[in-house]
Image (cartoon, rainbow, N blue to C red; front, side, top):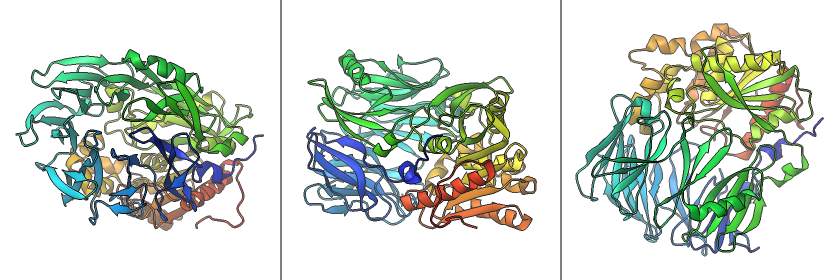
Length: 618
């Protein structure tokens, strides 16, 4: 039997992670704890002069980027999970930290940066209207904001050209699709360039201008099932296909920072694979692939494109990072994100394909407990959120946790998941709690039919849409599962749609088309809402919710918790007052996973790591 991996190693802060090389290639930034809180550290690229440069003492910094001037670290941070992000700049020499967007109840996102404009950023800020963002040019040294893209009313996306001018805007259209507008100058009139209907929109988006600013690189699924990388001449509308696959969408691409030429593209098949388009990088990628058996991703490069930071992610080992010098073709190991995991036997994640009851083939991954006979085991069906994303192969902390505790972890990219082309994604339209749930049930039956899973010891577990799926499993198919774990999942699709954040409201037609319209389809949405089937719940539930969640409000959990309380249905409810749509603080993660582990052990019979005192919440 494998040694029990402590939850602190699986779900605590990483030792070091997310390395980013500075634009001039001389410094390395990365994220690591300071007194238990994640902060940004800096050192010379191959040195040992590591030092923290940020001083967050609350939620921790999850991601950052270098400014193009090499002098500042930039990061966004919200307040206790409310997703009203502010942009902060920290001077790496003085440690001075400035809030560059000090506005209440305002959300900022970075639209563009450009090495030729090192003191500036383009930011989208919903300062004037909570539903839409305008674009501002931020001068980092002074903090001055200058409006350069006034939102005409419903633009939800923006794209700058190589001269740092906003020339593309994206709007939702009446059928749930997207319309792309273009202008030739920063002050010129907007003109419709193209439109994607609902079927095409999910996998399509503008990506970049070409160097001359006269063509547009896009992911485009028009006239194809999958999202292809194409170049479109703006003046003529002529489209040239650059890369495509008949079954899988283009999901990643890397461009040269000066020429804007696409160097390589990625397809998330069973594992991530790369197609080289620029022969000058082929030998570099081949050299990197010899370093590690995991899936490669170049996560950072300097302005010269000669210093790369490579990440390797495999299923049965922690994430590893290397610095790679393209001039010498030498790679230097930087660090491993969770080195303590090397002391434990991790499980393998195996791709599976399952034919659903209507003949649609769905893909996913199964992780077995290491060393256990693959027969009659307890199983957790772990449902991804989104739902318009997908599970991928590689190290996954929850899958390792479940397998280590003695459970099969089954992950299913049910219809509606992204990456498999538009037909597969659109097969999930208005199938929340319908055929999307059937795919999950069929996958469970597949595991039972193969003798892997004990049909009396199966749990359903997930967050966001996965949390909704867990509630659906408890209310719609309670005989299949013995317990369910819901993390920030909607319980009533009507109230969920009616309370989406204001900055999602311009895209409300997408929810109407893919989920349902509360004004015209209330009976349909009630039929797909676990809240209205509480009487059918016969299994215990664990429900966890962030009080500040702007996407799935606290009321979504509390209304079904109250209904279960009235009916006398066994449940545990955990409310985290300082969290939003998930758990950012390690102490909250520890509290949740301790409770979830004991809950699963009680109902599935697996192992658990004992606590000095119980953290369960009644």
